[in-house]
Image (cartoon, rainbow, N blue to C red):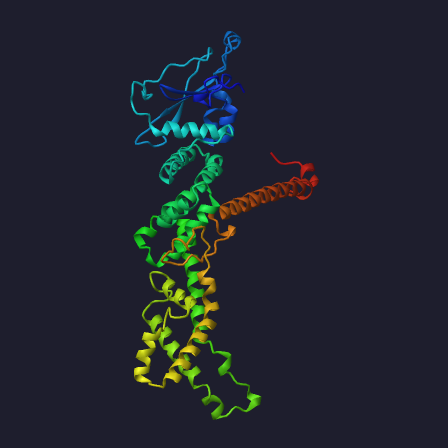
Length: 431
């Protein structure tokens, strides 16, 4: 490969056999082998039969062009499509009147930059993306993804797009949290594991607050995954709530062999009052829909349980309680201390719900929902597609082998016991 001297027009090769014309002022000389290898769409156009047979004179003059591809039908910055134009034996072709004119001070369409970045990726060069901020890098990435998809080359640019976005760090993760639906779509298209997982964590965390209209904007595979994860998380929350309601501190428990009497239980009256008080508050919270049914998925409630202390059932609430159940200062202090100890016992129950499985720093920027959803590699939709494709291919090969084996068996049967047996072949037939 001979790189052309004009570095600013890279990729452009003096020995390229394909003239790729994006516009009247954007022409790239590339190699058909590279284009075929990286794009199934271009591979269908650049078959050997479509290539010009260069004359000896053209070869002697160092002419390599055998194909010409013109970009056409570029509307509203869409990717357009490439059309094959005839090339003569001298490596020449007639200029297309449909090619857009971009010189004379006219604004250059973004699409040309995206194609240039894609061609760079074809030659294992890093695409040049504007990483000034998250908006500029996202704009370039989306444009690159669009043109790559149009040529069936998404796998070529996936890693580059992923790296460019991840370099934005917390800026990226805050953006994903703010618009998880759009980011899940981009991540799905470019097969970005990190960004896809991040988007799913935020989508599941906000699932109760996402409207049906917004859910309809999700890719069907993403929608199915989010719903499954949300249902799974809801079941976990229900199980945790049952455990919390059914928890008894070890102090109030007794062993039958000790023959506990009435006096034994009466000594724990404050513990039983604490149980009644807490369960009243927690049951009321569930009835009010502050648990997994809430728009925040129960985030406020579960965080209160984890915070303990005066995060819930504080002194003001206890004052209201004592209005109905008055007791001495010493008694109320004892009740409060036992309640505080009981709250500490409940914290481990909600620990897994408060785990942060997103990449966002929620300590600096807290979120109003939970980010505890676990997304494994086996949950990735494209992984399942590949497994399904491999399974189908294996079954096809097996059916082919079985068919060939069956054909051989039939031949053998026909040869020995078929209708044209030796006896039959030896018989004369009547006219």
